[in-house]
Image (cartoon, rainbow, N blue to C red; front, side, top):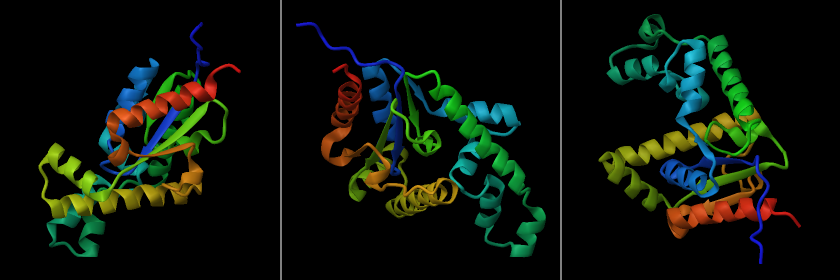
Length: 217
C-alpha cells in the first residue's frame, strides 16, 4: 500500500503558557515534518532592521516594559518623576514600528510555507487560512514550575511570579493588539496539555494533525 503524502507549504504556529515546553515541542515538530523552526530568527531579523536588540523586540512584542524601565524600577529608590526623567523610554511610534515589522516578518516567512513559528502571536497575525495549523500548549502549574526551576535554578517564588507576569502579558497583548482570547481553545485548532502527554506525545499529536489535515482524500 502506497504511503500517503501530506500537502506541503503548511504553517504551524505554536502559542504557549510560560514553561509549557514550547521550544522543545516546536523543535520536535519541525524535525518530524522536515520544516524550519522559526523562533529567535524573527526577533533578530526585526532588531537588525530597526537598529535595536532582539531582547527589546521580544519585550515590545509581549507588551512588556522596556529593559531600561525595568532596571530603574528595580532600584527601588526612584520616584515616578525621576524614572520619567532618566529612563530612555522607547517612544510609542517606535513600539508600533517594531510590531509592524514583526507582523511583516511573520507573513513573509509564512508565505514560503513549511515552517513552525513559535510565539509572537503568529496565529493571530496570519488569521484564518487553510494552510495554517494553530497550536496552543499548556501544562499543570506545578509541572511548569518544576521545568523552569530545573532549567534556570530560580527560587520557586520567583518562578511563580514570572509565570503569572509572562502569561498575563501574553494574554494582554493578544487582546489589545489582535482582539484574540489567548489560551481560549476556540482561538486554536489544537490545544495540548504537555504535562499529561509529555513532549514526545505533544510532538506526535501536532505532526499527525498536520498530516491528517493535509492528506489527499
